Image (tube, rainbow, N blue to C red; front, side, top):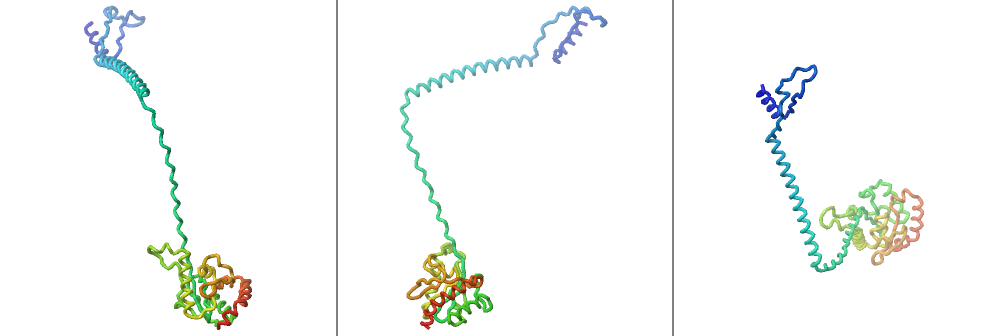
Length: 275
């Protein structure tokens, strides 16, 4: 029986279970055997797994101790090196002043390309340059064209003006693509319009150039400064420019018609005498 008990206790220890043995008979309990009451507990031998864990723990403690010792030694070496370098290092040269920041030049804004359409006409010795709101030649039944005929009658000029350039309007910009398309600014447009006017004036005797509309006035004069309504400015040779509102403005504002008639009475001798 004792051998069986020893095997039972060994199996429980392998399963890591605690072994409890009676020390005395308990009331109302079964009577314990004598050899269990006199059992002498021997110190249990540690299992290999437990011994291995203890060994690893000891090795780790030893490694930490060695690591701490090596770290302390390394810190001492660093401190000694720093002290020696500070004692023997030459004075550092002054840092050169920072270079001045170069501000990039702002890109030159592209000049706006004007867009307009003008129509050239002639009535006797007067050359007419007028704005076309829809970029198409005036038709005989358009209110603007009928108003123009009335103005020519009042000026004692032929009320049926002749359309020049094969009735083709002056459209700007001329180029829609290509390397030179972006260079069609206001200066180029002004040079283009003035050159065409100069060519038409040289074809027949011309006493005055009528400019009807904002674009006609702007791109026929030397600059935008000469844009006063009903004013006279010099063009080339003895030719003069007469700045007038557009036909559309004259239709919408009757007051401008009165001002046109007053200005016309002052200018009329010029083309009547030439005729």
